[in-house]
Length: 491
Ligand code: B12
Ligand code: SF4
Image (tube, rainbow, N blue to C red; front, top):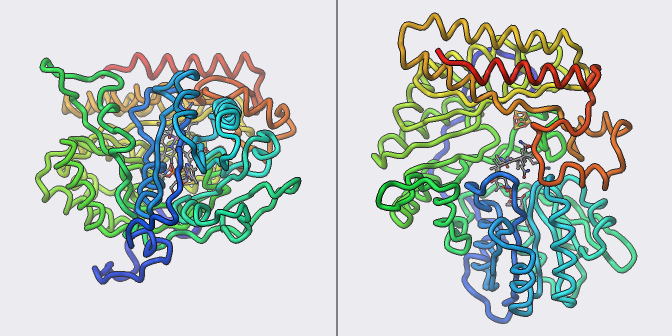
């Protein structure tokens, strides 16, 4: 994979086109699809930990879990912590008797999950309390040690494991793959779950349960008549990423790439357009462009549907080509989030990015030329970095601005300025537990629990720990200079 990634050309399809022949269905999906089996019906409450940003992103992953469990005949309720005070959460926890309470949240949600697990145990002494998602996947054993109210942690994709977990009524979860669980005084780590290959066998996320319409209004974006201007669906073309950048969760999840068929994704979008009047789509793929030709085929088909959708994606800088960008633009793409991450070759190498500063510049420029605003990301204060590295970031950003100034088209100048301003907020290298960056720097960090609490509910744009080669004040000053440069960019 690495040698392929080192090539400059966009990654092209090397395997035969996917046919539309139905694939064998995984057993847990067959069971789930066979309809409610009332004798197995169990009552489940799913709790979504709030992110510190406005929740324009609803709990897509939990929506999938809910849909699989509902299809298997279980009864599922859902609470989003962002819309719920601790008092309301307590009331919801006492509103029924639950067999299983499932918490979900990314790595920054430890403080919330700890409090929610305590409240859940007080309200439901007999329930199994479990956690899944980014935090549980990163530190499953440690989370069970730190939160005694938790009975199990799910690692990675949860659809199959959650379905299997609910089938066991006797508390013996030793056969459930992909979990670490509490067996009396012992913590047991089961076999890892296999990656779900049959993504087309998954149902649509249960968007009714998630009440996705309320997210259309948060933050408020309404026309004069009080309708939400942006009605946004989240969906995914493929799961996984073949890379393992060392600050990223993929450095430990090592998610194998699997793709849904174009028809399956398009049918889901079509239903959302019809039922929810969706006019915007966010593709939550780790990287939307892993195989150039697959992506080109999909976006061409999306454009033909005439849904008049605006949509955004995240992509690796090496995947883009003028042909693909033109097709994306004409199919409605209005933003590509790039992990540029650094403009210094040594830092990029250390991160394991398999990209170069020239790849970054090229992707940014091609995007602007195609009429799509790049959404830019930069991480400073990596554990190798000195002033020289940050000066190089500064120099390359100035180079992009100078290029923007030279553009003849006012529209392209505007897009370039927008892309430069989108570097804000500039992130500080933050070693999240589980990642290779964390393993390398754990000696500089407080205990795991102190560290989890310190960054709970916070973003990478705050300096919480300095792992660079620079004194804090110098790093902060560079951050200020870079922010200043990008924030005032108009062209
Ligand atoms: C959309 C998104 C966001 C949104 C919403 C985040 C949220 N609260 O959910 C926003 C923009 C707000 C966001 C912010 C951040 N994000 Co973000 N984000 C994503 C993204 C692109 C998509 C998430 C998604 O929908 N995935 C698809 C679904 C199917 O997967 P899933 O959500 O993981 O759910 C599956 C499993 O985890 C599991 N599961 C989940 N919950 C549960 C619960 C139970 C009970 C069970 C059994 C299973 C289970 O089953 C699900 C189905 O398979 C992912 C990357 C990715 N492609 O996953 C990063 C990702 C989740 N983000 C990440 C990070 C680091 C952040 C930030 C901390 C970064 C920052 N800038 O500071 C912030 C957090 C802000 C904050 N303070 O809270 C990391 C999380 C790492 C980790 N260990 O948790 C990810 C994985 C990116 C990465 N590759 O490193 N993010
Ligand atoms: S940062 Fe992007 S390319 Fe790197 S491992 Fe994570 S998702 Fe993949």
